[in-house]
Image 1: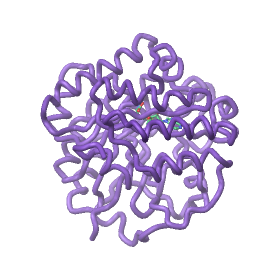
Image 2 (image 1 turned 120 degrees about the vertical axis):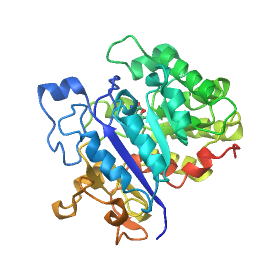
Image 3 (image 1 turned 90 degrees about the horizontal axis):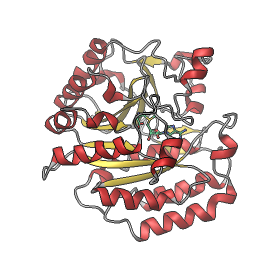
Image 4 (image 1 turned 90 degrees about the vertical axis):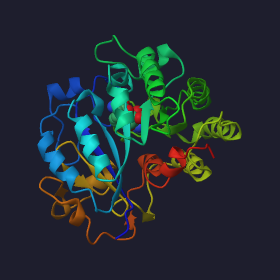
Length: 346
Ligand SMILES: C[S@@+](CC[C@H](N)C(=O)[O-])C[C@H]1O[C@@H](n2cnc3c(N)ncnc32)[C@H](O)[C@@H]1O
């Protein structure tokens, strides 16, 4: 049985940030009215059905000898929840590669970075959407208003210090690129390099066409030359950072050249990639379009499941007709991760 599955596992719903473009939607809006389809692929920062950690631990223990090669732990914010650390330990003990997606602030808390180093976590991807403190904190505001850019940078420095000259974890920055800020592609790369970060992934913002920020933030064909120029400069001078490969850069441009549509005939979603929601629901892929198209009979859960048999019968690849910008963002998590985590920048 090949060990080649990446599980993108959203551990928790809550987050101390309130990014208006977040896949999880806006807490204040959801407090007024819960979104339709909650628990059926629709995400919210309201933790209505988030799993108990003992249920998650039981599933994590079955990852040993399963086809799951890598677990990307995200959310919500995974590192604000204390059981995340013992769960990471179990997933590592099960022999999986572990990468954590975080807003970076929890890394400043005493002992967190050291424990992630001790557990042998393979990668930590920190989100930062601008090299400019004020702009970043407008794009990624914290709920309290008391933490932001400076604490994120402090978290990255704490982690790099805790790692010292050891091999891991590799530390990366992820930037959501919005149509009015193409320059962040190279500006954040320079900052990442100055900080001593190992890898960098600029990714296109992905919003549903009816999202209130769609027109303001989502790229159109008009934005292609500016984005292309920034990606060209980044590849010409990666500042010593590991970057996604040139195919990814081409997909980034292709995805913003036309409206979301199209077929991916050799998709890894449902073959090498699966998505787990905080309530344990298991989907082929986190794409809202693909989830919406999943028949009720195909809905599954990790609750009470055994990872050694849960993926039996999966196809070598799937034929998906729900291409969106989000598909571009999945590449670095699955096929591109070895390159990002490599000890030497390529
Ligand atoms: C949802 S967050 C969860 C992990 C963690 N709390 C964090 O802030 O990184 C995971 C990643 O998704 C990105 N993201 C959120 N909404 C997005 C969107 N609409 N389009 C593209 N990326 C998005 C975030 O910027 C972050 O890099």
